[in-house]
Image 1 (tube, one colour):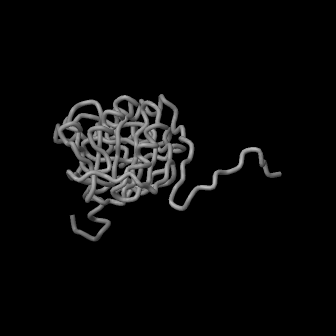
Image 2 (image 1 turned 120 degrees about the horizontal axis):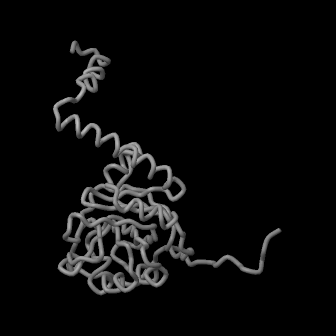
Image 3 (image 1 turned 90 degrees about the horizontal axis):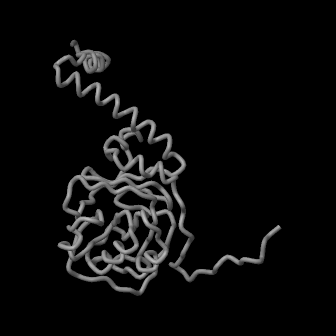
Length: 234
């Protein structure tokens, strides 16, 4: 039986505002903070992650980790980014699908001040930013496709907390976002605990390989067996 007490909003074309998705438990999010994005990617078959983004914060050891709060905007327009910021909670990572456009900045120094006040975990933007000297300061990790001095419009349309595509990576609201000097990766919220265990196991395996590389005791069969299987006489 249909519940008519809370009617579904009728959004104008191009607009949608969905509730925030909670994402993984806080202890899972915290556990990922110390894990390299490369190792997480290895645990996820090495085919997940952004392509073509760069970090605009200065410190290479800065790690971004938190649940995705997604926004899709018209290229060069940040109206719905401002609305999204009013809905975020501390630790959220704002993931913005700007269509890869870099002709107008989607965020600048004023929005950075808001992000700090809201205690965001960081931003990932398939688009441009401006006010680089402010973003370079510690306190608010940000990954973006490019930068320009040209500011945004504030006309819309846009959508909040919907599936987005950012620099070749699909992101659902609440997905766990991890970013470091190597790049940005999204872990599906439902798979986060499993990926955490696989990443830790992968790092333990790498540590054993690192030690044999350091001591010169690596087993030649690790690669020779692969070569022989391809028909090489080694």
